[in-house]
Length: 225
Image (cartoon, rainbow, N blue to C red; front, side, top):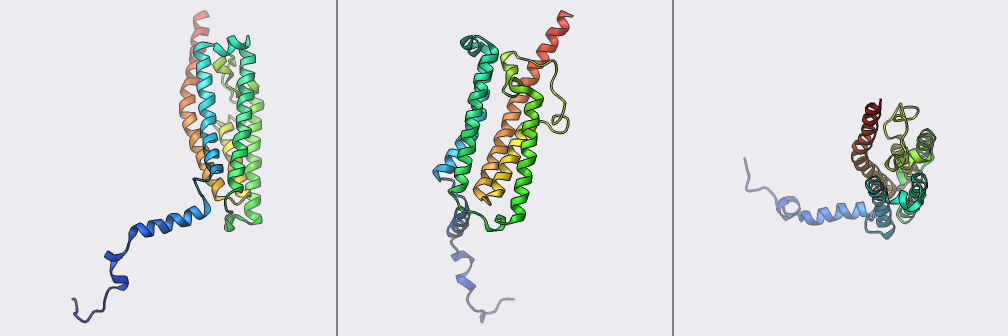
């Protein structure tokens, strides 16, 4: 039951609230930690997105045309050259990632010894996954040798591939996550999410193609036998 003696609505009623201003307040608070327009942040996002795009485009072009192998006179030399380019791009990506973190504020709740140790542990786990993947695959296996016709007898199933699919990608993601936590960096956490997303897209793009390469190899082997 309403009463004519009721006082005025607080703040003039909900109808007088400017929700656009409320949204701006939320965005302002978020941007206090992460500025997505910061040049270092933009550079980091671009390098994160570019690297898998680069190696997938080049590798598929090589697989279809053998132009790189022809230019270098050997599929192995061509693969080594692509691997060197990928390593350089990964160093550049890590540099941009670090600069983006350093250019933006730290988060107080992450700026403590416990969080630092968690980040260090993630960095250690990620490094183990990346290095063990490299040793299991070898240089050509790591750097897309199968696209150059440098195929293994079978897909690798030893550690760490026996506990995790695509361990090099997830090890790299763990490295970035650990690095971000060690720096108490919300920007780093955001960039790590971008890394994970890009790797998921890369896996969806690469896995069927790689499986088809080995299916064709198996089919050719059975035909010869």
